[in-house]
Length: 215
Image (tube, rainbow, N blue to C red; front, side):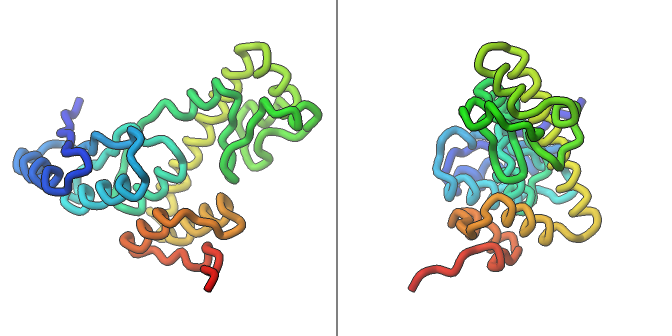
């Protein structure tokens, strides 16, 4: 078991710096970044993550607490974070929502009632291999089994996302992975400005993923 120190300080960069310095002096096995993912605006969120990861040792795990949205994980990874935890995959499953490369799929919607496709044709999990959207739709509106199946799929999705992220870093193609992820999530080029700002700081060019700004 390793004991991580938790960097706190809210959205105040001065307090964050004080906390980081105190924890780094203790030479801990790893460091967590806490006090985020609680409703603050995304521009403040990524800036705190960037500040903390830049000041923490690169040879120790850097763990951002409470982060579970796929987009947030990709952005935080670009900023130097290594680990995450969140109930999001299973919590959103309880509301009848599946995680897919394009974002989310609402299985409770009436349009799903006659859709014979799997949740995600690129997913090899047990749920996508054996059940259709229509079948899961019929469950999530009346049976807890629907939430269980969606939880299984969503956890499989997150495991695949994490593995793909890791391999892209190991193989030296992380920027290409980020651009592919953003193109899939935002096919119209409407990448949120906070993501653009974060990627600029991370040194990743995503201009090819963004729609031209009207003049």
